[in-house]
Image (cartoon, rainbow, N blue to C red; front, side, top):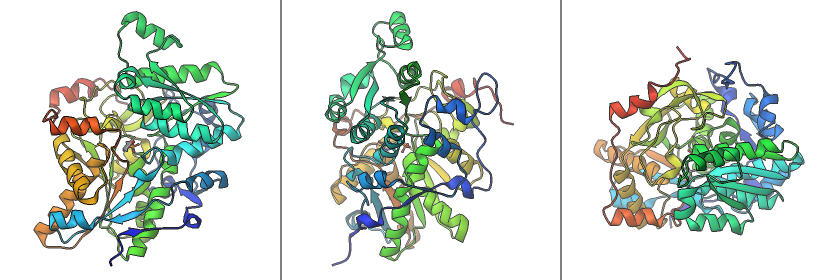
Length: 454
Ligand SMILES: *Cc1c(COP(=O)(O)O)cnc(C)c1O
């Protein structure tokens, strides 16, 4: 019998995270304080984030040690399997070899606990007692709830009100792991009260939820910090356990990927699978392509502009150098909620600008049909976000067939879709559609950016 799953032992959980900044030919530009337009100092960021996370945010060291306490909890589900998708290959009748790294096996069902655990750990080690964060669909909220529970922190999650009402299961998952979930806008903050005064029926948005979480953390600098599940350098760093394991597992399989694919929201799972392969390419050469996949309705990498922009809709965060659609861009209501973000983290943006990685945008219906094919061949129901990576893996496999060439394809299965079946129901009922962003819609927000980068 041919090997389907390439498995590592607990002892092979990586001992270090890989920091791509060390190997980049052009380092990312610094974050700016929006008022002074000067680089933000680590001291300023320490008010909001745990000190070690801020140190990692600015670090140029190639490898950063993973604390034993974090590796111990990684053991709950790591190392995650690398799987050869034989049945998908057969269905596509392709000569390509398709592999996926299965990050859906974590307790929260996605890659997000890879960073939630170290974030909670460093906060707890510093003596912090309370964390605040925001969540849209609830994937990040549930990952950080799990991690906060593990390290004895109290967690408040501001969940966008419309999701709070529509996605009761993720809220319950957060409650199960001991978190308090507050629908945003709430009356507990200035920002929330302000929004409710303007519109008592306000259904909320991610930017507003961020404002509430940040405000709550800032009120108690003595023992409260805020945390974030994507975009920032330290978050991408923590996710590199994915790609480091995959490097070893691909070696076990005796193959080298020609292309490594990850779906793209703020960049964390893409960086997680892609950066270790990119790092090897920087050091040892090779032709591996690293491809980020975004939704056609939110195409910051393929159609956005490289500019300084805010990380959040409300304009409260430092300004980051990023490919962006403008921080007040309102993406269409697609089901891959985790990919509806206006910008890309600064590491990924610089790499794209230097043409060291590639990006492609795919329409929603193609992603669901690829996701369904995957579920019906490989058995795992993918998260709507992850179906974007699957769609491009399928495109690559069909191209290999057309060219009559063997190619090796690796993609990251960032999560399962068992709590997203509503999206599949909509697809079955023919209620989903593609959203093709017009140039006019695109420029409505991009043209409003104040253009700092020449
Ligand atoms: C949050 C999420 C994403 C998007 O976030 P990234 O930071 O770009 O990885 C993708 N897939 C799943 C399953 C998620 O939960």
